[in-house]
Image (cartoon, rainbow, N blue to C red; front, top):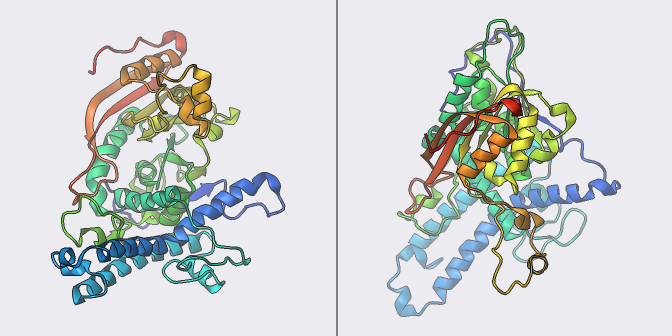
Length: 456
């Protein structure tokens, strides 16, 4: 999916901006209420800065396991696996290190764009060794504190950013975008016309769970006013950089699958590089012209924050003509809460377009026979995020019934639509999701038709 070829307008389109500018307006360290948020931002930045060092350590660990094998076994291995002892292994280490540094360069450029210290800044301030600004065991920060290494969970999110860059901003991700985004774009085009005779405003569409912003930009390119919403700081930093600091004329070459060690077909596959972005975000012209039919350019923005917190505010009620979500609904601990907020934020007759599975990210552990009571069950799992213990898993049939009770009328649905999510096309294993696509219309609760039966 690509926006219309940009035609140089008399005046440039408005830049993609970020609401709630959390990078430039962070409170000082003397402000206790925001200290937790500041610490979280710093931990996110640390995970990006430490990427190459974590990758180098993972390679060293693999080499150590090989070196611990009996000599007779080592003699049967490909020569590149004998780290540092053969020309093949030296060349392989060079290829992997170059890929690590390519990815680290992207992350450092992203942090610099946000006005935040990079891995090289940490090195310059005594942070330690190579490839990410930290050393082989311990180091110190700018203030002389002991370096805190990122958790595995935080590093998984860094890897997810790389894979999402491939999905949203590379030619390799086109097939995924066609599967997931094209039905949404078609639904918006059909049910929310961007140009209607007699209307003096541009339809406003919210894209919750916007990730790296490609779907939001595609909708903007069709002539709509768009606001993406994202909670993850990893994704927010990356989307801000891609939308505001990158160009297809000077792409970054990244290796999204570098951490892959399983289901690999060919040895060079994980280190292969792809250019991102595949289009110039700043060159996208909404609707293919410099101005809309109402005589102004629509706005494009990204709002940082948790969906419920941002859009349950009174000022958001009835403000939106459309909500478009992709792989988002099942991120709710309680999907009913999301549906109610979406219903309230839409104006009368507003359209909700959704595509995705029902994976239910917060699905918690089951109650066991030896849990004597539900209170005991809650106590046993009190170490978990409370959302794991609040999650309600529902079938599509049940979700559809709940939508009717909230006040939605289902205008269109298609169940079992095949889609992938951040798939490596060269891997031996990828997950195929059977997704539900639907278009729903906000109506008064008294006039909502009952939900349709079956899958048609």
